[in-house]
Image 1 (cartoon, rainbow, N blue to C red):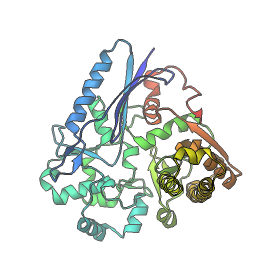
Image 2: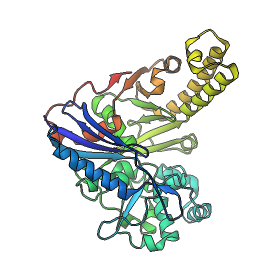
Image 3: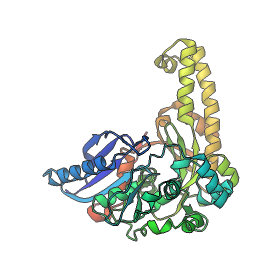
Amino acid sequence: MNHCLVFDIGKTNKKALVFDEQYRVVHELSVRLPETTDEEGYPCEDIQLLEKWILGTKAQLLKDTRFRIRAINCTAYGASFVHLDENMNPVGPLVNYLKPFPEELLDEFLHKYGPADRLSIETASPLLGNLNSGLQLYWLKYHKPEIFNKIHRSLHLPQWVAMLLGGEAASEMTSIGCHTMLWNFRENRYHDWVREEGIDILFPPVSSDPAALSGLHDSSSALLPYLISIQEPFILLSTGTWCIALNPFNSEPLTPEEFASDCLCYLTPEGKPVKAARYFGGYEHEQSVNDITARHGISQEQLFQDENSPARREYELFMEELVEKQAVSLRLALGRTSVRTIYVDGGFSKNRLYMAGLARKFPEMSIIPAEVGQATALGAALSRHQVWNSWPVPDNLIQPG
């Protein structure tokens, strides 16, 4: 039996998973690597340590006689660049996207290329500081020219990992299109500011082979099992701290009203836009549950077990409000598309009040709880299916929640 090795690089956990031809995880390694600090003392990914772990784990698993590894791929968190010199060695630290961005530099940038609303809508990127990875290069150019002038290539983290694993130094659409402020979604090219600053020449071409070892942005990778397994149009509502409604079938341009309501766009590996609407529902739920249980002097277990208590009634009223907010967000992602199915994964897929509330808000829709094990890594394995797997993609990748 053939196998596929996938590296899933999260900000906290780094994983190596081996899939068999039925896309079952037959082996998994997980590690937390200590961070280092940049030249200003801010915590950041230790890319030397990460490289050592990736290459050592790859060598270990390729020698393991239990597996017949015929393909490798990777997925990683976004908004992070590894900059390389002419010898393809890292230049400078990997900037932590949580690091505050200098306000005066942002003001200068917007004075040159704003206004902010127009720029954000064109690039489908809310102003997020270093989470807009393009701004990291702008910062380097004007604050660290000694580093910037050494850069020959800039690769987003998933593409750098892919290069380590044997892939070409290439750019990739899911990383380019994730709130980077680099891509003009309306004109389907790098934004004018990227070219005017001479930053576009640092990016290698996008790979023309859809099955290449090119790496995937984690959010887009997690969507792939659904896109591959489901034929009819759908929305994926991924619930956690953020509840993100992803609609791969909504190609309507981002409007100022949508943008103001926390909408943005991602890109599929083929460069097609995915309308996304975010709601901080999981965080609000956590805060409200903590507040209700503290005021009533009960445990969370009691809150969810006793359905006739005053605390429970208060919780049910809160859930009505939460579902109303979620419905507003979902309608933004829905747009004018013909989607009639909403798949809900994550924690809220098991919340009876949440699921029943959505069913009332969207009576014309099928609201389906769903689970995909290791969805992010699975998407990366599926993207290379034709390279290593002669069997058809199984029809049971998405399990009822």
